[in-house]
Image 1 (tube, helix red, strand yellow):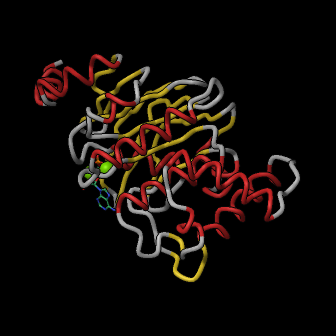
Image 2 (image 1 turned 180 degrees about the vertical axis):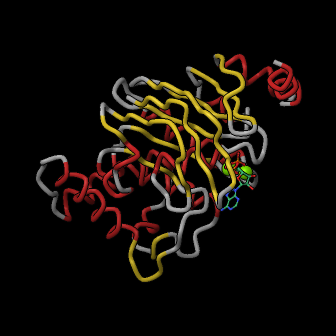
Length: 251
Ligand code: ADP
Ligand code: MG
Ligand code: MG
C-alpha cells in the first residue's frame, strides 16, 4: 500500500527527516514512537501533503502512484486520512453538514452515488456509537466548544465515516487521558480491515495495550533507528529511548 524510500524532508531549511524507509501492507498497523522532536509529526504531515515541508530526497509510493506529486485534497480523496493533532473549530458550520459534504465528496470521487440526508443520518448515528459521542454534537458547530475528549471522538468519527485506506493518527504529546486513548483504540480496532492500514504515531505505550500493532518503529533524529513487533513498545516503556539512540549513534 505504501512504500517510503530514503525520504528526506526539511522544515524552514532545517533537515528533519534524514532517510526514512518504511513499507506498509494492507491490513497492517504500524506504530511510530520516538522522543519529542524526532520528526514523527513531520513524517505524518509530509504524507498528508501539508504545506511548509520540503521533500529534498526519496520517494513515497501509495497504491502504485507517486504520492508526493498529488495535492493534499487528492491524497485525501484517494483515501489518505490524517487526523489532526489539534482539530480546528469551524463555528457556524454544523458538524453533520461537514461530515455529509466530505462523505459525499468521497463517494463522488469513488464513482458512487451521493447519499441523501436521511440515509446519511442513519449512517452517522451508527458511527457515533463507535466513538460514544452524543448525537447533539452532530448539530453543533464543528468542534465548537468541544472538550479535548469530544474533539478526539469527533476526529475518530470523521475517520469512521470517510472510510480511508491509509489512516494516519498523530497523537498529541500530552493531554490524552485514558478515556481518549480508549476512544482512539476502539476507533482503530473497529476500522481495522484487511484492505486498510494505520500509521499510529504515539508517545504512549499504553495506547498499544489497546491496539496491538503489527510493527513498531522508533524514530530518532529523523531516522528509523529500530523496528520490531509489539514487544518493542514494552521494552521502550521499561528502558526509555536513550539506549536506542545511543546504539544508533554508535552503530
Ligand atoms: P515530533 O512529532 O517527533 O515531536 P516534529 O516532527 O514535530 O517532531 O519536529 C521535528 C523537528 O522539527 C523539531 O526539532 C521541531 O522543532 C522542528 N520543527 C517542526 N515544525 C517546525 C516548524 N514549523 N518550523 C521550524 N521547525 C520545526
Ligand atoms: Mg512533538
Ligand atoms: Mg509530534
